[in-house]
Picture 1 (cartoon, rainbow, N blue to C red):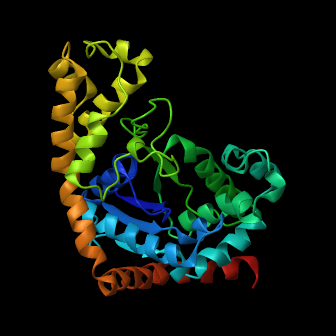
Picture 2 (picture 1 turned 90 degrees about the vertical axis):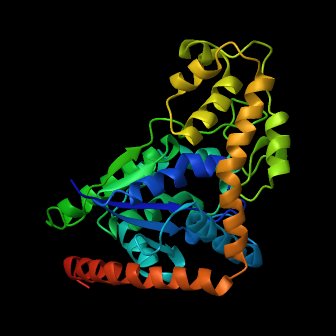
Length: 333
């Protein structure tokens, strides 16, 4: 069965190994299935829910697009664009805001986590951005959306909005109700300094993450200094539940090797972390350094990146403009 896939990545700058293994690597695999039609978006409208430096935002948009391409996303096979170039995203977001209900948004745990104790000072955009995410998905009749566990609730909201619109306007199946594509293995890559925290750009320690543009020396140093425990590597998966750092490092090795974690455990069972880290560092360098080199090469040609994004936006706009035209007819505009 063919799938129409939509997903987006925020242009935060300095994409890291967690972004690659948790999302982009999966995007490439989905693209390479000839039955899939894939749309990948740099969601710059989502980025401005928190204050951005305009110069940095433009730089980060290009850097995210470069990381997409360097990682293997093919702009000739998939549509790659940045959200703000297609006006239909914001227009449909407003229409869907009039369909969505306050109670639905109040249940969104991501807002509570991101706003923290100072909810009164958070932007309205941060509160309602799940509706923009719904617009992103529903505009393109996406049948499937790759999501992490932290975004699953937002996809449920998209499904609720699609169903309510279809029912309210007596338009059965006008909006496709999308299904989640949840990556079962290695979807969450954890900090190299704390196996209980997700790898993140916001962590103040550079040693907590491997950036996609790190040099081989930086990668080797970060793996060498990655937190471990004093026990030898385990001989079964059950032992990993109480050893988050071991689980994380073995997971990184497994994902980059395209093999199960049980196979990796069999390979390194009983060995010391120092021995394993040498092998892991070599693997990360071999897999990530070519991406890093390609990112740096692509970033030198801003006109090329902008052309990829504008060409992608043209293709996206062709789909989105037809959908919004039909939406307007349905609601009486």
